Length: 59
Image 1 (cartoon, rainbow, N blue to C red):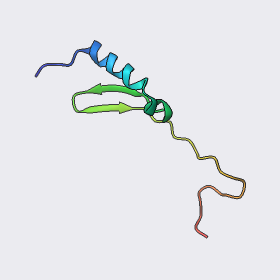
Image 2: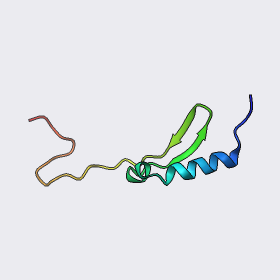
Image 3: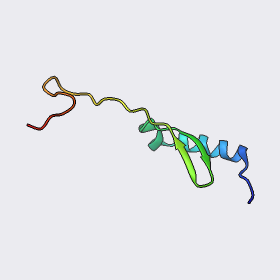
Image 4: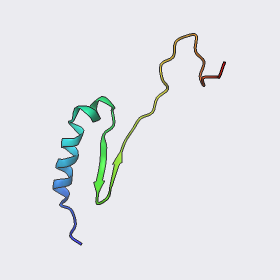
């Protein structure tokens, strides 16, 4: 099986990460390969109003 060109992969990752969808979600692609992609996602607690509790409890 032929391997992927590493320079091509770098260019594709840069192109993907410049797109508005991935920028808006702060979700950069870190690695691509045959049949997989590694994406970084920083999870944070949602901003809550003073009346809400975390975790949200059923009322």
